[in-house]
Length: 340
Image (cartoon, rainbow, N blue to C red; front, side, top):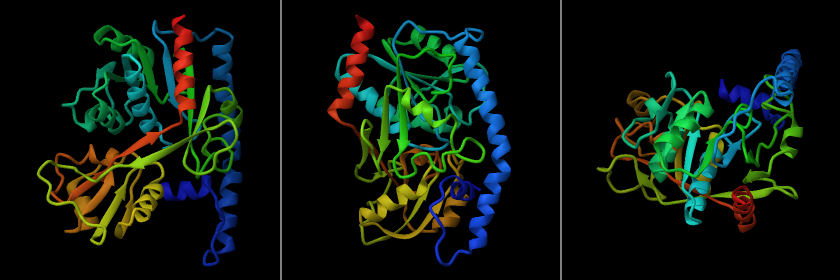
């Protein structure tokens, strides 16, 4: 299903082996979905207007809030950006905390994300963020409640909201839009005929547009993801596979092909690459059916969901975001303005 949607939202043309009829089919589907996109535009415009008119109230927390989000559906690099910000702020004397929805986790109220909690209870991205940084983090559908709980239970002087660009009930001081540079805005259409949660105009309102790989234009901040060394999913892992060894790659992220391409570019011998749905819930049987006895290489986001049943030859490839000093200065200067 995810592959079908990606072809619909991010068209790159069809190869000679694919029929023109298939291309026409996708265009017809977009046309049929267009009325729903118009309805989506109407509903979201009305919601924004209610906040602008003060009919729906926006609440501000007593510390600066940095929102890291996007206007496209799917992965764009928000989680590495959040980790980068945590480390940047700590290096300059701040005490950051993080709030998030906790995608795929159903519970009432708010929940603190502790290193001991499995991903199934807090979500894969929160588990990854806390596992990597140890940052105080609270998840909840209501981000204002999550932020209030964070401030009342942890020593925090700046909050990073992981996602939530469209969560207008939460006041914010800095807005960062993270964009997949390879896919950018896809076909430029709103949901469901395209990947956009808001129109392209929204990209002009944020404090910084961060482009993850691919093509960058003037005024945008470039972000690259630097690969680290392979790490074992479980501590008792055997020796890491050599580049010449046949391996199986899996990825349950917004753009799995980006991960597979990065492995190929790094010289890994991919016997098979298996894409899964974003936020996929894994089990041992499914992955063994894909890989058998071959080593598996997965993303760090996938690894946090596989630790309870991982084999000794399962590995993950961590990545670190790299941004420019100009981006760092923009964030630090804006925070300084909030203090003055």
